[in-house]
Image 1 (cartoon, rainbow, N blue to C red):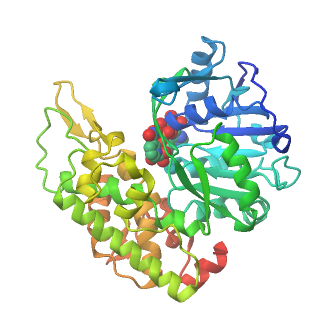
Image 2: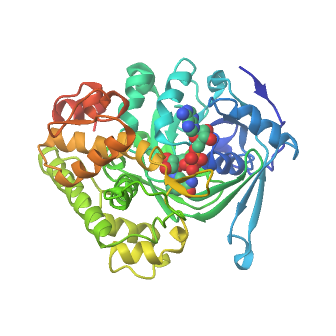
Amino acid sequence: MTSFSPGATRQQLPSPAMSGLNVLICGGGNGAHVLTGLASTVGNFAKVSMLSIFKDEAKRIAKAAATQNGEIHVTRCREGPNGTDLLVRGKPTTITDNPSVAASADAVVFVMPAFAHGEYFKALQPYIRMSGSNAPGGRVVLGALPGESGFDIQAQHILGEEVFNSISLFALQTLPWAARLTELGKSVEVLGTKQTVDVAVTPSAEGKEALVTVQNLMAGPLPRMNQIPSMLTITLMNPNQIAHPTITWAQYRDWNGTPFDEPPPFYDGVNQLMDDMMMKISDEIMEVKHFIETNFKIDMTGVLDFKEWMIQTYGDDIPDQSSLQGIFHTFEGYHGLTHPMIKRADGKYMPDLQHRYLSEDVPMGLIVTKGIAELCGVKTPNMDVVINFASKALGKTFIVDGKVAGPDVNITRSPQAFGIKSMEEFIRKLNY
Ligand code: NAI
């Protein structure tokens, strides 16, 4: 394990409540660079560390940052005066691959695809402090941007009850930015910043205090952190689980294996079939929501019809709000993105079906939601079609005889993966 220390100089912003906070940002991709760059400019954080335990990534990031005085440059596109680009230069205190850095952390933030959360939980578990945090509320604040589905189930399972009960666990519903790395360890572009992002905190009574820290991490007023009542909402209202696997399914369900000359458009290519299927899956999720509200009296505010969620999230930035097709075709932030492909030596393209659109958004998305639907007795024929396609593409078995079962369920975050057999047990265990 090594630590690479570019050093620390930051502008000072007064905020007595946040004085002396040690922040640990975990991950090494697009979002982790943005958060590290931004949080490193918040002067009242005593220390901002970046941790990547993925291969030799920490070393590569530190080496690259060192060539520009240890700084990570974040370009906030069109967010400056008169729509100009704004350059933010943040200098993290440490870039390391050593998880023991968590021993002094008051706030720990995962910014990575959800399939990597488990590895980080395991690496950090021995070091998370159970008392003495400087964060408002006095508890270590630990969470993910975004949480995706089943974040809390996995956190409780790996951290153990004692650690889990001592921290404030938070999960954002989505990444606050559309972000693309331009050069590892050096520069990243924020193509867009969301206005508001829903956040759930467990225990929810600690939410107000925890949100002070989470909002400060954003290094500015946007996006506004909006606390929602239940972590179960983050699980069910996971937009990626609806869009990514469904668009992929429709694109390739009849594909005969012929290579592509060009990567096909992703959101620009949304057709009526995709629109219909996303809305049918959304309807199944709404049925689960209503079942839980009616039978268990849990406040599921924030679980919305998918089209409504898109309009609420992106609002005036969507010129055609009449249908999902209209939304995806006219929302500038999605324009130009293509299906993930692998380029062959002959210049042709093959689909990358191991991409996180399936490998993250099914095991940490749709299958978790299906698992909860199953506990509620809600049928999900449309979700099943997409999950069966994804299982085949990933070479995994997640469903047997229409139920969440099979040898690969243990890589998912469905309640079934943790041996949970009823909705009552699920709600009691996770304190919903
Ligand atoms: P990314 O694709 O840049 O993440 C890659 C990073 O994940 C790697 O650099 C590495 O640090 C880590 N990683 C990958 N495989 C790993 C493994 N096997 N073990 C441990 N670590 C591993 O992710 P990005 O773009 O920062 O996104 C983070 C999350 O935000 C994802 O859940 C994504 O779906 C979501 N999101 C991203 C958006 C974006 O604009 N980038 C927009 C909306 C959501």
